[in-house]
Length: 155
Image 1: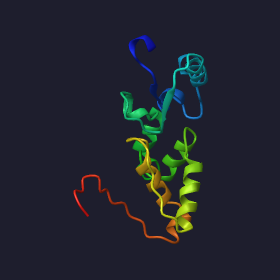
Image 2 (image 1 turned 45 degrees about the vertical axis):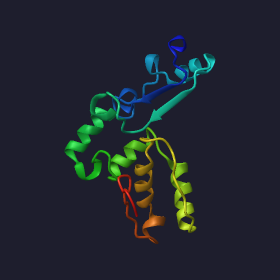
Image 3 (image 1 turned 90 degrees about the vertical axis):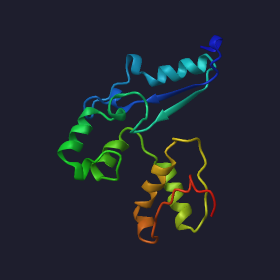
Image 4 (image 1 turned 60 degrees about the vertical axis):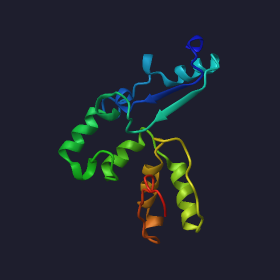
């Protein structure tokens, strides 16, 4: 890869490949993330891991496990995919969560701080903000809304 000019790897970690059956995790063989990362370290190849419950990669149903999609079909109130539905949120925290980021943003907000989230596109900033908006500490004290000014030419 390096001979071809590649200097950094960016790759998804798809939930569907690691928890094909609910509660049964598979990190063996080609799914061994630790071995992959160790190999990249040995080869001095930087890696950007794109971990998320939903991935915009070329994978079946955005990387959601089939068992979760089945639950969303049978009980959309609890398991609506890509939502704040309790069942979906609980299922997603077993794969990845953003506990520390949520804690920091909620604390900064409750303490009256202004903040800016800056990261490359598609890093989950909007979902993180929406998740924070649904935390009790925020809902009890604030009216929250989201305005997308990306396409705004002037204020």
